[in-house]
Length: 261
Image (spheres, one colour):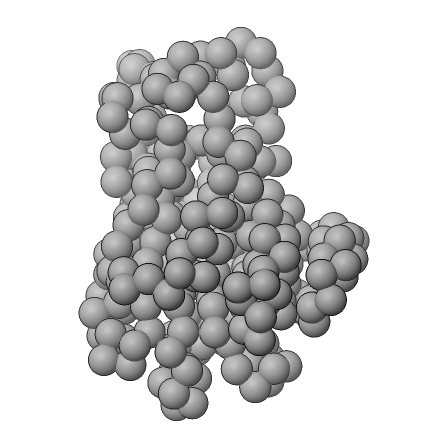
């Protein structure tokens, strides 16, 4: 119960990494605001699963693709408890596409969700933290593709790279208020988002062969890093933690091929 009497807002928490994060936060005693986008049933199931820890849980729906929704989510979340100690920006979208095939709609989709929505939610919560003298922590899930883009990941990687740069600036500007801001650049983590890979033995083998640890990471392994850092009260801010099984130590697993329509 290292986080008892703390309040955490976790976005994209109806499954995958977000679900793992709220489960571990609740186990440590934190009250939870669980954000979801579409799957209300899954969100309710996650909320029910943490009820055994005797913590308070609220479920909020928002479409972070719209800045107004992101701001409204932050305002409503703060009103529920009158404070938020931890903001975990987990929500995001990812898919592969050749650069020559990207449309304006694709680009807007990545930027609006992965960058703008996260920006405005973070700004809303950070402003409240400053106004109410809450010395909180903000963690954002980015990607190793924001550091070293892979084949088909140029625009996705750009949106996550922009988030990396943004959060370092945010960390700098919020440091006088003792608000710590860090990112986690994750590699191949086994979630529904990449089920097309781990449900296909051939594709999974191809990926695993090029990860030094020879396997996909698990959502719980990402969650444990965040929760342990939050519980430690670490001095760290403006840092990027890479959780990728050693992926960036290599050069990826796929060579680019000539473009064919």
